Image (tube, rainbow, N blue to C red; front, side, top):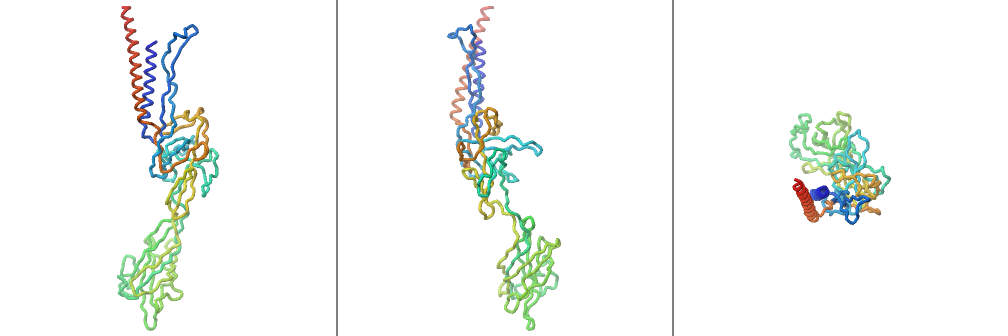
Length: 423
């Protein structure tokens, strides 16, 4: 009997040491909740036993109870590192295969999130952070359980527009000595972008394709005629090369009057690519000048989708994203949940928990509501484990184990003595 009692003490002390060791091992784990082993005595009595002389039968482990006290919050500087100050859990959607049924959410205090390639906020386990849908002003559109969706922050915003027209204003030299490598006026050979002798000057121009991607493009200027007494106009030709393809001019060239200004009806050109795409080139403001080639202005009507430039999360968990130079817009409001009995949650590992019948159904809300903590962005909650306390407890558990081992040794010694008497 006494050996069984001592054996239960050894088992209990071993369980206590295991729980304490687990806490110590995870002292650096983000969002980790420490636990403690809880025990109760074993007392067997019969109707015929004398209560005042009855002796207990050892100890039993009742449960390993999780502790949900606040851990220390440490700033990280990463906007999507989120910490909860107060009650609540983040709700996450587990990573599953494409043909799997929708899984039950995972609840966690570990708020180390980042964006994956699709712009979805995920943690290191691939679990997606759930958020309430919101208007662009940040007002939640629904807080009904089941309507929360993974927080998605597109890396670009808006639709791209292909370039259709370019406005370019330049100063062209009047002196043939400033024509670069152009061999003659007009050049003896046909225009070739790889032969500098066939043009006087070149400048890059901005062009976007239908997907908003920048395309290499340039405008080439060729002097075609000098003024004479009978014809005081100066002639220039313009050629476009887009994506390495020289484009065919649909009409006319440039003509400048004796003052160096564009002649009436000159300056608006059109070019057609092999795909049939047409580019307009407006050279209004282009003039002749007694200096070398110079670009004054260049603009075009295409655009790419605006890229994500900044991200903020306020205390209520609303995520704001700014694209380009635009005003920030709300992307979603982080969901928080609480439980009537959080200690009954089932541990899943990786600082995650699942609801059980004993924990009660999750109560969803938002940060700052009654019963919910606030969200601090750019920070993480460390494990709520006091290392000093755990080390002291480890020493105590070790001594309890040693004491139970000594009790077993004593019981064994007594039994051995009895065996020796019989022999």
